[in-house]
Image (tube, rainbow, N blue to C red; front, side, top):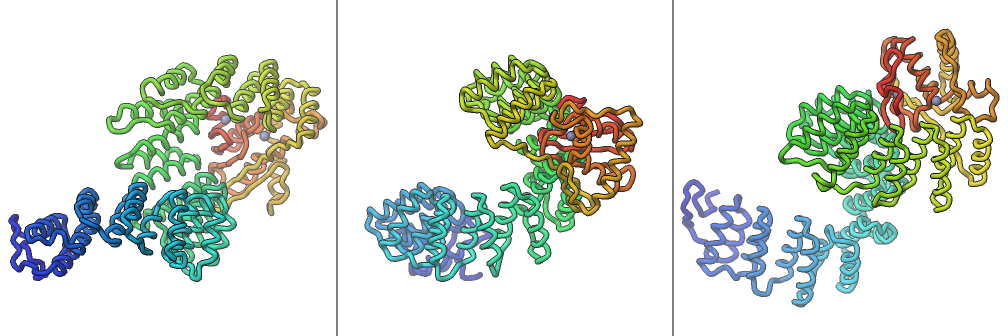
Length: 621
Ligand code: ZN
Ligand code: ZN
């Protein structure tokens, strides 16, 4: 490039053939490759009095922004007399791409005061990333200056309204577009997907002719975020079938879906896909893998990833700590937590404390948990939230310090939510403390805080203490209030396919074999002197029906299916939506002993590893 008139090899700046017009100087600026070259040209322009030329300054400003020197860019802008619309627009654009939206808005207002008329590029620039309230104001200007029909401006408006949760207006603008650009479609789908309106998002997505990876990510991410991980995985498979290459964002979503579903085989497949396609491991993907492996019951794999991960941040630590907590490996969680606290450059966050406090709760480490809870604010300036109080109530309540737990709920600085009351009532059930439970329920009813869960919990407590009149009373109240119990549902992944079971399910194609297996299991259990724990079943069944209803709890069906469809010795992994009941817990312990299989159950709260007749939770859950 002999036309570039400076020597790149020497330190001195020598312009051999000085450009004699501002135009040639401007084109030189556009071709400059380094910040150094640019500052040299800038110095030259000042020496030769070109520095007030609008196109020279405009190009300089834009190039400074390109080299990420917004400061120099701004200096130049401020020193320019009467900047024109292009200059303003370019500056607003630079601010927008650097996420300085309110500064961009200020400049736009300044431009209006200077009576410089905006053009379509100004609007696109100022709308990029702007807040809805600013966007609405700019929208009126768009109409005033007659740019509402411009595709780029309208696309930017759709984006502002959809990001600002005003999906109705976003859709109105979108529907009136003569031509739908990929960008406007993506904005609209993103708006729907981020607000859980997945059906609308999917309808637009399906109607698209060209979809880029961003669209696929938005759609898959929407499913995963709003409780439809199975649909997310199905769409991911379709993406691969259509030869669309996933990127990091896709895989983070997909791994989260695998974790939610507890499908280890699929999760492992995604991991090997990453490796086979040369995707570089970084902290985002690593953390997603740690999370997936721990949620799928494979803590060892999670730890391998954690140890290999370079530049671990606090999110990676949190993920591993939560993994240990979920599985009840409290000592490992504590070790990692103290490792995190001793790091110089990272500090524990609120999530770290949720992880470590729930680890303590799962293992009943009351005094350690209390110490950590106190240190949160004192040493780490992390204000406890309802989740932290929830962990403490769980920790105290499970360990039998019910009064202390109740005292904490009554005196905490945040408003108690149904979850925290539920936790407390759960502990009352565990310790069969009817008096306190009744006091709490009375308090909840008096303060209009009782919900479906309240009645169910009290009813369970009455059942556990054989107070059948109490149970009947609760059942009537539940009926009166139209309260239903969430049905238990268990799933198991066999050969890359999810199989779901609800209690008493006969829908599975292998139902006959499953129930036959269950009969066989019952035979084994009887031979081992097992008696069904009928206490926990509502009393209006006779003793035999009660035993029968326990036999067909969803996790038992899933385990029976696991036994008939996998090779002897294979671990069985079950995911359950509710807490595993006492009877299923006992039965699973025995099955693990009789069949010599490792059975891993993830219930709503935690993991249970059943090996040779005992459970990793130590019957404390
Ligand atoms: Zn059960
Ligand atoms: Zn257990």
